[in-house]
Image (cartoon, rainbow, N blue to C red):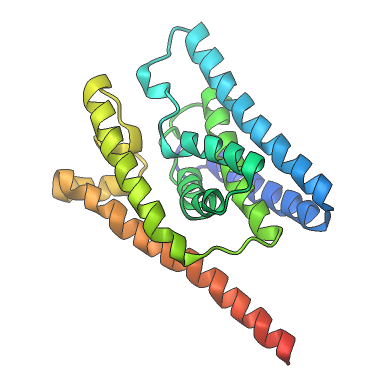
Length: 230
């Protein structure tokens, strides 16, 4: 299975369909049902992660790289934190970091060379779909991002990147893709030409994605406001 092969396109279409139907159901649900849906998604995330650990340990394939220190793995804990506390900054992280990060992973997966029915391949697609789904449900439920939270998020990400660099140097891992942009990652093209300076591409990519995400939400809200006054 390669990038944008029939298998990859199948997963993308399946993800869109799941997002559409679950988001539609969530929008029409009452508050109690919405909370139950979020709980079930969080449970599914951790069950999915547990399956990965079971498979890799039982087959002798587990390495330090499977520690939950990638951004998408961290997103599971942020989703759990939000479900338990509904903290605004957790919502903002899920929208500004988890949503675009997991969406990019679905579009440009670094596990794409695995067979279609490989358990690790199915896990990778499903866990990233769940991570995308959670903030989409928040948006469907009325959450609106606040750009004023971005400086704090950027500071946390910078600290996380520095810690990931330290952990990578000790364990020989590649958390946050600090030691190289994996094959399939768009930043691998940049790394080919500028070497280690490709890390600056994260800043540019974050700026572009946040401009698109926040711009789209504010534009949509503006249109709704104008339509309501008409």
